[in-house]
Image (cartoon, rainbow, N blue to C red; front, side, top):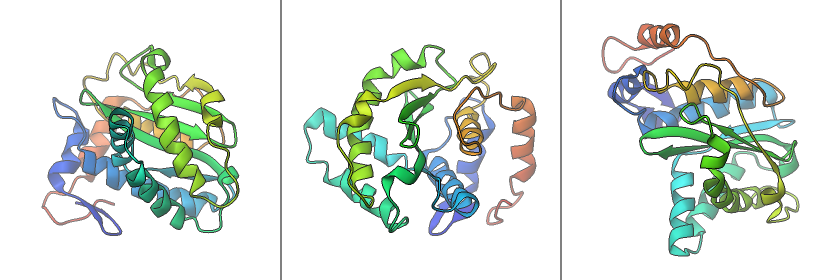
Amino acid sequence: MVKCGTLVATLEECKTVLGGTQCVHENYVRVAGAMYTRMWRRKFGNSSIRFMIDPTFAARVFENVQSSGDWNDCREIGCAVAKGFKGVHANRIFGVFVPVLEDRKWWCAAFSVNNEEVWVIDAHRPNSLEHHAKAIEELAIGVDILFSSFEGQWVPGKITKWERKAVNIDDAHGECDESRIHMLLAIKGCAARYKFEYLSPANIKEERGQFQKKLPRKTGKALP
C-alpha cells in the first residue's frame, strides 16, 4: 500500500496504474496528489507553491454548478488546503493541479497565478482545449473560491480572462488506452519545471515496468 499522512491507497488501488481496462482508482490519485504536494513543498518551499488538490474538488464544483449550490463544500476544501500554507499569499502559487475524472479517463486543469494561465493536461484528446472549455469555466469558479482562502486580496472572476493552453504530451494519444498514468507523469513533469511546456513522457512500457517493480509482493508493505 501507499501512505501519505492519514491517507492510504491499498495494493489493489495501486495496481490500477498498470493499465489494462481499469481506470486509475480515485483514491490512488488522491494519495499521489498528497505525496506530490508534500514533495513539492520540500523542494520549492513557499516561494513558488505547487499543489495537487483532492479529485473530490472537481466533482463538487460540477455538482454546485448543476444544482446552483451554495459552494460551502468547495469553501471547506479551500480552507483546508490554505491551512497547510498558512500566511502564504495566492500570488505565490505557481500551479494548482485539479484532476478530473471524465468517462473513466483522467485529465487535469492546472491554474497558474504566477503566469495567469490555465493549462490542460489530457493524454486522451488531441483537441483538449475545445473539449474542456465548458469544464474550465466551471472549475474557474471553484478555484476562485480556493484562492480567496489564501492570504491577501483576491479578485474573483479574473481567471476567466487567463490564457488557456494545452500541454503537448508527445505520442500519448496513441497509447492512452494501454496505460492510465499519463496524467500523473505529466503533472510531475510540469511541476518540476518553472513553466508549463511541451512534455514528452518516458516510454509507457518502461514506466509500467517501473511501477510493477515497486509494487509490494505482499499486502501491507509500503511502496518506496
